[in-house]
Length: 277
Image (cartoon, rainbow, N blue to C red; front, side):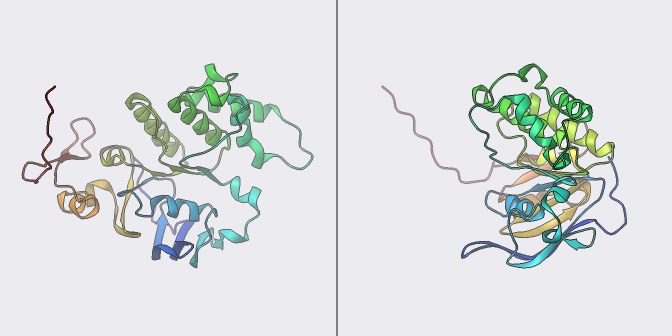
């Protein structure tokens, strides 16, 4: 794993108040994204994880505070300039019914196209490499609408890779993937980190987050409860506070990172009745 540098973070959230209409999600939330690291954001549903990522990429305007990149408010960047640096894969992306996988992935090259620029060999190579890396090269000529949920998710990942950005933000990228492809995707994100990219991903599986991420951000009710290296912050007390889940935390037998083992032995669970026909 890469140790986050001691330099001031290039991507920062400062005193954010985030809301949808009258519903306030977060108040005075601040976070520095470690450069060149894999940051995983974890927490229960509706705690503000996805909302934070949307603010980072300017899809949600803060009611108060700001998101800054290289010292500038992201609102001051031209859209294409920002998209050449910050790539974002949302939780539920939509594609036109008739678009094919190759065409979808090629859309990732849009930020690199000037008003008169022609499609180049570099663009072609980037699309081919992204499809190969995401494991969808054999689906290149298939309509996206005909793919399974997992295949479709990998096609979207390929589009994000084709965008070729320094920062890659992904909102629940393992959704719809079977367990094999979940781990392959997370290993890919770790490899991109090792190659110098900054990765920020919202993840639901705390054990996967601990295994692959350098930096963990645990959220609840729109606030950051704890952040740091998984080995430094993940313990039974944190998991109880964040997820309301009693756990025993033990070393992962493969990676040595913290692994949460739920312990519901003393919980009062609802009785399950079994009808007999």
